[in-house]
Length: 83
Picture 1: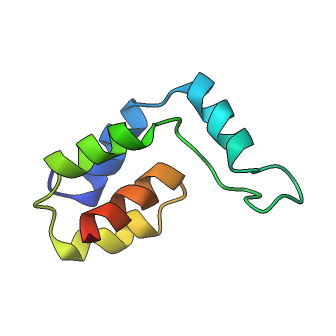
Picture 2: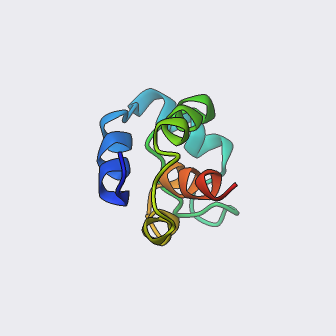
């Protein structure tokens, strides 16, 4: 995985509807709540960290695409790649 597109496609393949519902409730994504509209794939943080380990050589120029993605976990991956 060396491009944002590769990372996004891989993370989308990890989609988990059951965990997605849990995360959307935890982050209060309902109408009028603080996380209103945030979208989740249902990927737990340890899974995202594994993606970061594999994608650690992603060029800096690819990170903005991750940070602007509509999926919460993809944005997190972008931030973790910067750290």
